[in-house]
Amino acid sequence: MSTAHWQGRRLPIPAAWPVRASPAAHPWAIVSAGLAPILLTGGYLLAGALQPASYSPLRTTISVMAGQAGTDRWVMTSGIVLVAGCYLVTAAGLTGVRASARALLIVAGMAGLGIAASPEPARGATPGHLAWTVVGAVTIAVWPAFAARRASPRPLILGVCGSAAVTAVFVALLGWLLIETRDGSVLGLAERLTSSTQTCWPFIIAVALRRTRRPRPGLAIEKRDALRGLPPTMMVMAAFCAVAAIVTGLFVSDSRAAAVAAAPLPFLDQRATT
Image 1 (tube, helix red, strand yellow):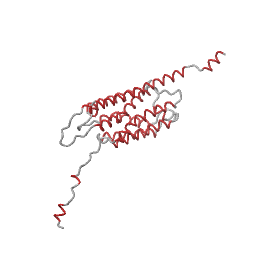
Image 2: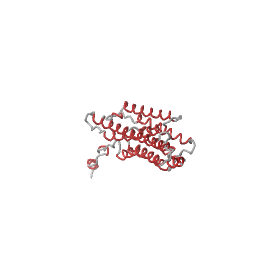
Image 3: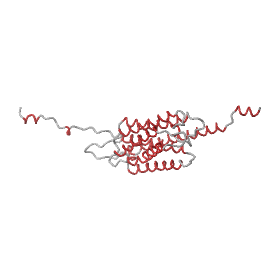
Image 4: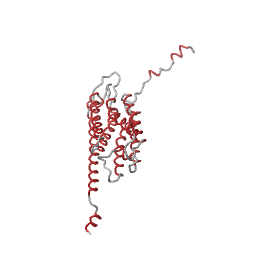
């Protein structure tokens, strides 16, 4: 058979085959991003319930529960490790953001593992623990700025203005936390509010990217108002409502602990009367 005949029967080159575009956010990345705030919040609430009555969630940090002086510190340590793992998994599956944003999520995950591996001693703090804490806090605070997306289509919260606004809020929360570290009266509250809010954001970004439809070739890119505005806004509102509920629970638990500590014991009153 001639060479020309074989060339006529040649299979199409792979470049001509239809290529399936990868999703901007894999389903397993959305699951891991959603588990991060649940594991963190559930971890410090459960660990706080196991601490003695002298522990105050409004004044004491999460690191104390995972430190050497904490009661059942494996609970909070496990929560920190699981959240760090969620960051790493989310970074691997969040392909719709820039490589720098995914790299920062990896840094945040490694910082979480470093925090868990260097617990606080009974008194003071180790340089390693402080270094990992600062790296993790700064990284997740500036992450929304690096997650901004210029290509279309993009959700409103992934635009330059939306990402800048969220970054400003995160930096303000971080500044409040820094101020509270200098003999502040609500250091624990500032840390919990900041961490719970910031850990929700990768999940919001992942869901927004998943709902964003890629434009089909040959068609004009249309703006979808319902896709770009309403769902992300509702998710942000739900996240802040959840954080507000957590803060309310912390106030209630702290007030109850204070009431129990201030209340006289019945057997002491009886002894005093006799």
